[in-house]
Length: 231
Ligand SMILES: C[S@@+](CC[C@H](N)C(=O)[O-])C[C@H]1O[C@@H](n2cnc3c(N)ncnc32)[C@H](O)[C@@H]1O
Image: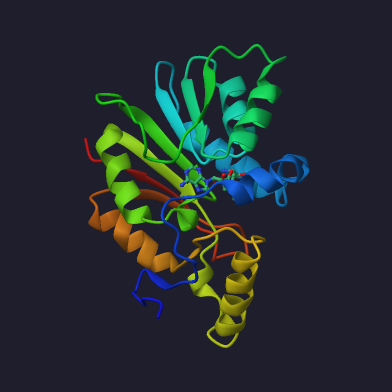
């Protein structure tokens, strides 16, 4: 039986021994061609992130997909160093291909599972996770690791769909569809059913200060949160 907590309502996931990028490898080419669904919100989030970037900072983006966010930010902030990672080789292959003609010396892409192989002593001014955290098997453990890697005053920036907010009436049907899709390899696993307030509570319980909490109009299930590590 799935575990129900105040943070997330269920783990509709097939249990896997370790994170598996196969689903994302399979869809990477299509994902790269997908237009941004809500351009205004996307630009708004980038602008908010940009407000806190300064020359000399080092930023990590986890689960960067084909690299659009990292590329946009690296173009806009040449004095900031960006490291962008994803565990899907295909996503990173496409991201690196995009870089070829851009001449960006302040951005590198790496194929890495979030939280793994982080060099000791490496610290960041900001860690970004867009549409990722609900997919990470132990996302709370990952958040703890991230916080250790943040400099004092550093930022945790995240945005994701909180499936735990969907109506109770349709949740079993959605759960069934997801489980079936996961069995057929058409949907990634795991997918956490996060609750918005539960997610905020975890961030704060781990010691971060929520400084910016926004969602696109009419889309309260997709919080964009910027939280700072105390100085
Ligand atoms: C929904 S996509 C989001 C991509 C990009 N951040 C965006 O917002 O367009 C999720 C991405 O996270 C990556 N991903 C999922 N779990 C991961 C993990 N444990 N470690 C690293 N990357 C992961 C997938 O390969 C995929 O590229």
